[in-house]
Every structure is written in structure tokens, then in C-alpha cells.
Image (cartoon, rainbow, N blue to C red; front, side, top):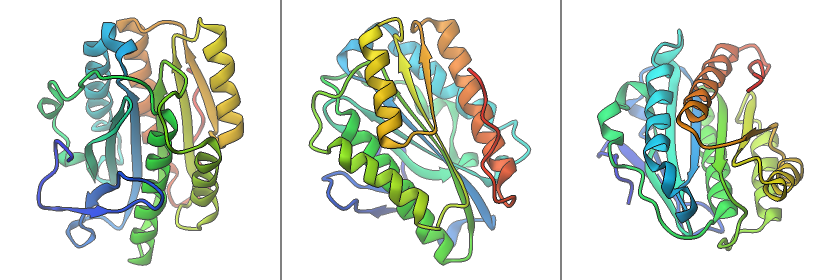
Length: 247
């Protein structure tokens, strides 16, 4: 069950997956257009040494997004994964995301179901965007998947992930999509090669490699993610994706 949801959220199923997602009830939304920000974070056992830094990064993303001129038009969903996918909270307006809610929300676990989490995340973007556009909302999205390892626990396949990206890009529910795969511990050439291949095969728009999971690098990552979400929101209505940033 999501940790930070309330009764204003509605549950959705994801075809081909055991785990679904949740999102703010559409009749309770206050704006006419939204950017869906999706953050998917690896919490497998190998990230235990920088657990607190991950939590701080998530908080920084939320704080920084509040400074966006389009803060009222942002919704965020936070997902973590080890060998299981866990929704910390579904898509909800930024105003409902509070720093203190994320205290101890990051729970370090087992192995790495990277494909399951990515498939769930992309499917959630497509499905909720379709629900919104069916109600005459304008929608675009920014997706960030952060991992320090290769998949070793998923039931979803690379082909399913690729199909989820294709669905998001061709469904006509999203005006545009920014998607970034982020590798932590990019000094590992094997991981870097693996994630570069995944980016190209699955359809991520960009791959970013962090050399190490230091507090400084993860703070820089938080800034990168929040600015990317903000730029994507500013672009909503132009028919174009937001400006791509260099990490």
C-alpha cells in the first residue's frame, strides 16, 4: 500500500503487472493542465551506504519544484524498488507533497527489479495522462529512473519496458515526454554499458551517469531533476518537450 496517500486518491491497475498505481481524483484537481513528474528510485541492498542521501535528494526535488513558476501545475509520483515495487505516493499535486512526509520513507531492501519498476512507472504515466486528457486536461510528463545496478529480479522484460515507452509516446495523451535514466556508480564500466544499452533499447531520451553517490553528487542530481521537471512544465502548451539539461 502507498505510504503517503489519503482518500483523495484513486487506484488504477496496470495491465501485465501485479502492482498498480494511484493518483489524485480528477474531480478534485484545481488546474486545467499538468506536468506529471515521476521519480523511480532503486532502494536495493547495494544503496544502503547512501540511504540518507537518497532521502535528502527526494526532499530537495520537492522543495526545488515549489520554486517553479508552474508549481500549481505539477504533480509528483514517487516509486521505490528493490525486488518489489513500492509506491510511496501516487500522482498528487505538488502542494500536497510535504518535506516531513519523506522522513524515513526510503526503506532499503533486497535485489533489483529495475524492469518491473520502469514498466510500472511508464504505464502509470500513460494511463493517468489518458484519464486526464479524456477530461480535457492538457498533459505532459517528466520521468526519472535512478539505479545503481542491473536488473536481476523482474518479471517484466526489456521488451515490455520498450512497449510501455512506445505506448506513452504514441498514445496522443501526452503533449511531450522527457525521460532520463540515471546510473549511480557510473565508474563501473559494466554498469555504464548496461544502462546505456537499456536507454537506447527502451527509449529513454537521455542517460546520465553519476560517478559516485556522494552527498554533493546527489544534491546536484536533485537540482537537475527539479529543473528538468520545471522546464517541462513551462513547455506545456508549446507542443515541444522542455529543454534538455546537461548534468
